[in-house]
Length: 130
Image (cartoon, rainbow, N blue to C red; front, side):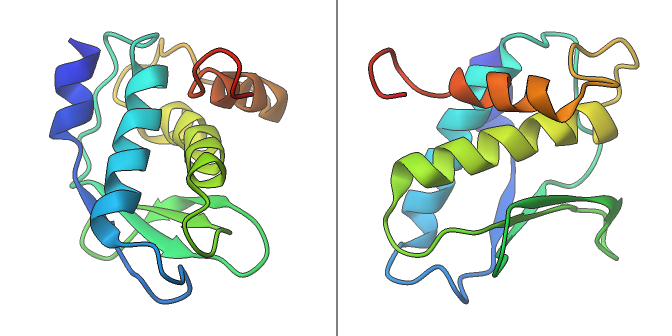
């Protein structure tokens, strides 16, 4: 199931720049956000090692190239315990990762435009928190 797949995701968080947020809390938020999107892509799988999360000074960004050891690199522009911002930014970048790195060529996010990623990232929020 998508929930099981989200639990199996691996994260490597480089803490520099994220302020007083803890790695465990960041990972919990990212895992939750990914699970909300992944349920729409039940056949999608990531063959990469996991997600390498780092602080980006200006904007969130998903790299097309993998890290040297095979991780999907995602930069998030969040500092501190701004969990909604972490969830929104990561869910948007997770949609890009689905489009660019998932094994399923028929994935719902493949060839998606940025606007679809914006709409998809809204699904990471429970009703009323948008």
